Image (cartoon, rainbow, N blue to C red):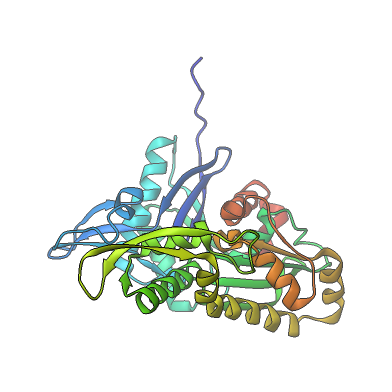
Length: 339
């Protein structure tokens, strides 16, 4: 039976430091690709984008650079980001039936500057958006995990992405207290790279550091503790080498960035009005984003701030799902959007 394609007119985009997710209204998430582009160093021509480009990280020959145009949750390389966003939107537009230029909602960090906001706006317009609206990432994450953001009772969400950690207390469709820090999954990867260099004289790339973080990284002691073989280049001999790394070592290595996230949660709670604080005691704190999947991070934050903390359902897609809900119920969520 042939599937009927209805005209799609609205798209939600989670333009993240690590991954870009695109949702089409009525279809769900249709694209989930790494925010990476392979660029010819001499001409600036983009060779490939997404998963194909991510596989090139740390493996490119002279003359080709694997570039991540998003840094700390915002556009760092405007030219490449524009081409990447245009590529993703065109991929979605050609796969789906668009009669007119789509209306696009993009999630952005709550601490975004006006210059960064303009860069996002210009990229989306050039990529083919008719109208662009923005929503703060923690607000979108809160809507995505089903928190009642439009009511007077307070909800608290911690969204840990690749480049930023966004902490927000939300009530009446607005962010009442927030704390946004440029620390996320990328900082943890860099801490692991630094540790391997210092402790083992081993040089590893970002993809290896990410694999170590996912497989044996944790915020609290594990039962049992884990080990992993890590391959890289010996800084002394210059030859390939394999070492066995323990989860206790990685936990110590990533302690500093994790502590920065915990301190940001404390700062947001310190400026929260007392009435909303009592709601948070009752309802607890929700963790979303890729960083929420670090083992025991919810346990550590709960221990540090003395409030119940839980990881939201499917934390990786919470932001884009929330943006999709805004598309579905525009009247209900119109107050959370900025043009």
